Image (cartoon, rainbow, N blue to C red; front, side, top):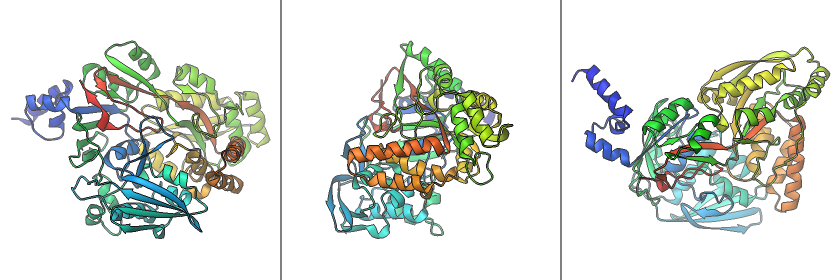
Length: 536
């Protein structure tokens, strides 16, 4: 068949939503492709932040979503219960005090990787120590929060893992952070077989999988789609869905069109307007899902930056019209908050510290010697931002607000993978980004946003404050609830005054599904268990 004819036929099938098999190069007939479509979940969304699928390296929203379905952690939070730890690879665990801190002993269930090999204690130790050795974007969770080293881990037998943590770490927080994909357990034999130049298999795991989760990676076509196939060896069985396709659709309009035609089953990024319309359409389920996410402006406070003076950063906070964003742009798909701990977590502060006040902002600019303002590049994402707002609309609103106090924000749009690479190199002077805690505890924001040494958000914004670092570290290990609450009150107030962030809003995540989809749940952590979803 001539290539032009074949391509046209593929496009025709694709438009009808029955060409998933062909798009993966499987060459199935139409009836077989139709059958496959019934067991295939297709999600259209902006997945441009995807940089790697290695669970120990990935530190982006899309990466965590995928990793949670490819890999298992020792313990987990199930569904919307984000307070009760549940077993995953560990069938049980026990915390006992020691002379130097605490010991956590995990007993492993019988489980297999997608390769067919059994999950052993050696795999667990390898998976955690490789993250420590690689110094990945999320390794601070193990080294700075859990305060563990390779010597902290041991395996008395193939089904037992022992983790010794010092007094400088809180065992409850250690267990909580082990639910994040940084603690996803990798098949050590498979990773070692693909190791190159001491990289612990990272280059290979970037676009391959070696986990025990309900799915395994079929392929990742960058900027096109991620295809997952059911893992027949998984203990978390997927009775209905045998394949999941995450299709790159950065624009909400494309998602709307594809959901209407039946080409996709789930739309990840509806605009507020489109979401309102979907709520009244019986063909769809419109879910206003909760989040612990914060949409914020990051201001690089390093030497020579226009935001080096804390008064300039404070001026930006006063100049930011949060109500206008929430009421007009988001149309209610967001909540007003101004501190670094999101609504829903202990330590969140409802106080309004900086009401919208342009006059006050101008006074602060003048006091900082910036009465005439300045020009700065403003990095923002392409596609949709949190709450479903088109990033260009959010950027234009921020640009307009800052212009009122003399700051000329030159909008530079880029895909998320490029934006976060620039940000992690401390090269973004001003940017709009989102952050969600890696685990549902105040420390999930306290350490990364306050402690420069953690090399996370405080570091990316070149903000080093010894008092904030110490307070975050002390609050993390405090066991008395009242004392801990007080410490986080002090920390959030400190960052409101001096920190490098202007919180814009805490969004809801609008997700729209075909009416026949059941079992779909996205919790405030952003987790979705694909194996629990079914289609009619």
